[in-house]
Length: 235
Length: 235
Image (cartoon, rainbow over all chains, first blue to last red; front, top):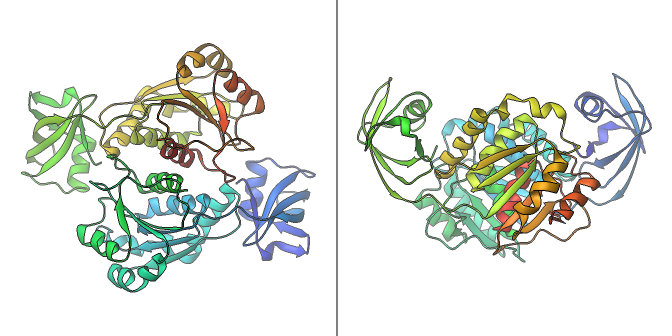
């Protein structure tokens, strides 16, 4: 937690917050914060600044906060991800938020196991929890939007073309394709497949929607590693 | 497991292997392999090829194997990593092996908690286990070498200059530094700090050994994410 992320419900006055629970525990046990210290704070969806700890005990912490700087810029990208297995999903959500992806679409694919769609980690509150951890890690305040698309074809045929219009459309896919481009100056729409990859029909449909296959070498990477590697290469 | 990684002890004849334990379980339960199928195989430290399943039951699997292609090239890099916390260490070892880093040095830093050096995950067998998982993921056969350097100063003063000689020396460090370069054509020596970063003295000492600070934007990334992002950007 490199940023103490505040929400409207934390405020007891315009410049005062009262914290309990996870954030208090983290302040006490990991950062070993004491009264008088200053911490970086951010207001969810808004500015960042600093907070001075006025008092802190086992029950709660009270901070005087002031906001004076904008959150870091997001990447100009929409990321489509074949729904990963639940354990991986949680880490990927953190990575996506930490790296500054503003829009994430979790998409079905033939190689996504049906049971993955049943996980409680897809509940809105569970998704939000992981995104918040990513924002706290990277020092950002703005939640990415996450959309679930349980049906591949209607999404790719009906909604993806508009989403990808005016952007560089890319599908990460192993094989005899051009290497993933570097240091783009334009926005992108990037699709990353499931373990085992997209099937040829899916690559074809993504291509019809404007997304062209690119490869990242012969090595097969875990989804989480592929996400950070591709984003770091593109921007 | 995208590659069935074989060791000399698995062989019962020049072209026959017998598998039990983890790899058998994975073949049966995850890949649901049946007799007659062909799988990608690799010989640890040597070539890759294919294996045909001759028989397979709850006890063991017998495969006829042939090797005909080299493993993928490694990255021309030596990675120095401030020792991460044990849970992160395991994943980082997998990432390092999967991405093709040939040499890893786990290094002390003021911000590395002393207890991290006590973890059983630093036992050679435990390190090897995670590296193997990374090789199986990425389809590689060659184990990276991993060196533990519990004392920062003697390593950086006495051994690092020779290690970094003739390479582009870089320290990933947040701050007002040049951005991390892209698409290097020369080999590199890259140092990535602990949670909380290197202290100024450490950055200075790394600089004396030929490693210059570069930054990857304002976002603070987890070690594992920083490793894959920096490697993908450099090569």
